[in-house]
Length: 117
Image (cartoon, rainbow, N blue to C red; front, side, top):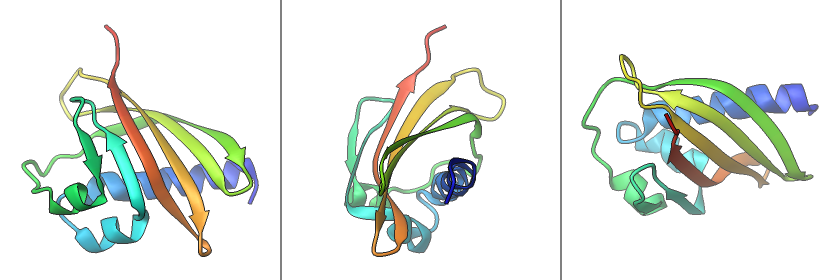
């Protein structure tokens, strides 16, 4: 898979994960590696079990833009992007590390950081 294809594939997986969090554990369980962890925008550390146990408090989804890809090796890639909640101005800089495991991409790490300004 070339970089353009991989970027499109990982962006699609990231959007699926964002939209399913707290609502569709089947999707999340399939996308997150068992050793997944995240440093959320709030500073809270999450693991897979915590994400699977999260209850959706909103049905709105953030917009995601400015996707960029950096390969970290043959089986690992860093995906970065910016998210903004609907009708909001609180931009969040996001980074995810995706790993190829057993023939499928799995999310192993995610971080959300409040954007300055």
